[in-house]
Image (cartoon, rainbow, N blue to C red; front, side):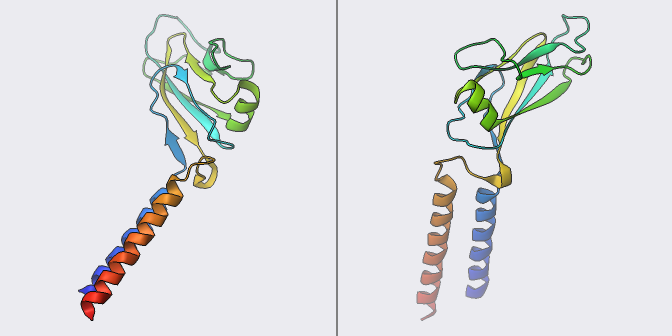
Length: 163
């Protein structure tokens, strides 16, 4: 039983480490226009999913429907415009991605996401390469250390009970 418990604790530790270390997407929880904070990120992409929420305009094919704006402004910046390749039906979604390093260089650490012309933001996700944590974020390292220490403590308790 003790060997089984030791094996179980080790397996839980490995799974927990995998979920913390390899989480490559951070959903910012946005469902509308607003400011995003990129100050903790140095690389990766911003993925914005937008959907058509109403059908006031007749045909949106080729239209600019929003994008990214400089901090504290709502005019979409050149090079960061989201255009529709076709005329979507209500609730159709489109994804737009931008490089974080380029956005920070052009628009600053806190750009605005702004969609219009019958389109709304469904989600904003930061995608980091290879599950890299944001710069300065010690959460994954802290979580791994806590899990490792808890596993070691459990092993010590089990060994003392054996003796």
